Length: 297
Ligand SMILES: [Zn+2]
Image 1 (cartoon, protein in one colour):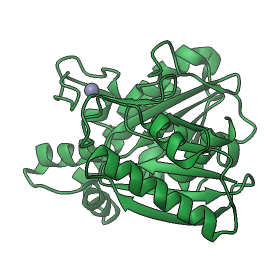
Image 2: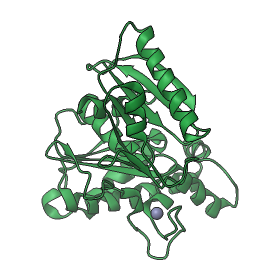
Image 3: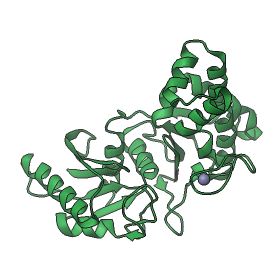
Image 4: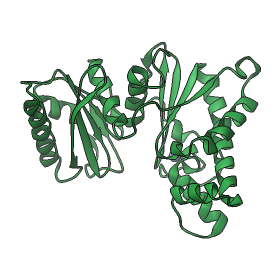
């Protein structure tokens, strides 16, 4: 059994996971306090979970963290966390728990989870795209996650899709994330209607037959689809797996994605690249992804 930890900006979820993908027990703590306080609480909570399930020790710990660098085991310059600079989180956790610990970012962890337990089982070349508050990416080639020289490969949310477009959280303009995320959709709604609303409300409006909202989903999907066609040209995947809160819009989003991607693909790929929805339960997906990383240690 291993521990999977999903560190988010406000809370951290963790679970004890059997290698068949069943989450035996779970818990969460707030992400906050000083770094030492946080790591102490996390490790005490995790060790408590291990002991209360009749185990002496866990075999390994995997963590999905914002800006988590697999190579160094450090969180590097994460903007949405209280700790600035470079945080050697894997070493701190490993020392306190007494088991090896590996980290990566949440989209990479999601890719590992889909490969082991979800929509990408049996697929050795695929691209993971997570559509949440931001857009995350994970690239798997030949059955291995691509980390790159610095450990940050697959930052697909920050591919520029619109020159001089919307300002992105990264400080540049026109990133995919500024359009095809939950925040991107609510921004589109604000531009269109002048009203503040969540992507969920835009979805509800589209379901209720409001044309402007349906158009936002078809335009968002089309932009994503054209961009996915470019991603395909880089790694020639068998499939693209889509997950995250915005993907719950289902066919309203995925149908225009498929259409635009197919129109934009080079001839040899047309009709061949599958778009798959995550096959993991949304509540446990991030923990399962992190646990998949632990199982690779
Ligand atoms: Zn950006």
